[in-house]
Image (cartoon, rainbow, N blue to C red; front, side, top):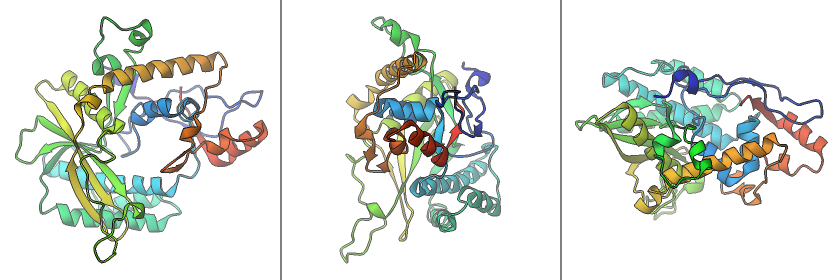
Length: 358
């Protein structure tokens, strides 16, 4: 079993750290905070985003996860996603109590306390805070009379080693074996089971917010609440969703003999008016799903190689196809594209804070 001391460490946020030559460095401090005790929401420390960034762009991975750079002001769509996730965590933590499960330590039962927390998180964006409270209100009104899902964990971080996810094989290379004790983490929005069903038959629920860019048109040309769901849509072959299920299956094999993680449910929430909600069981094609354990190990090998190169002073490549995606420009695009070192440092100091990592 993985020790709490090994897995849980403390985040530290502060000014950017440079060496005597003006190079940005990673402060000498430990990295992980599970987020279980005092906060809800956010990406897990060694989860899908961490490993995805290795594949998407080694330079992005270095800036975010080795140097700990995060934007000083988050993008509004991400902020609103965070606010909605936090609001829905309030709903589900309350449902945990109703079901007789111990609620998370971060949970405060009063709606006024949640609103104050959202105002703090969304400082400077009062309309976004109001929007998230409206979403919670509509969500609660819709689901409370018909709720058929029982939460057993909300925004809790779970950990496994790569060897637990991908059991060692005789044909592995030394590099593949070397990463077996490294950690992968997931933080499902909700883990639970069907009302009246077997509590050992678990499902993951993942919230996905949708905005005006997704608004389908009704016959009268008005905006529909949600796009029609497609079983072969964007979430079907999703690295995040398949990793969630894969890692959680490893966790329950280790911790809960007899339990089983059946799969994942997507909870869609439209943030703008007209609001809308819908749940869909996610179909994961078996050929893609079976690739996840080995893919994870190979990406961990690549991350270790990039890290070793960094220690030797070899800078990682940056993949220009990741500079602009359908979600917008990469956070670090202007840093990477800075014409001089001074321009780069000025942009770093103006636009980023540093979460110390190791």
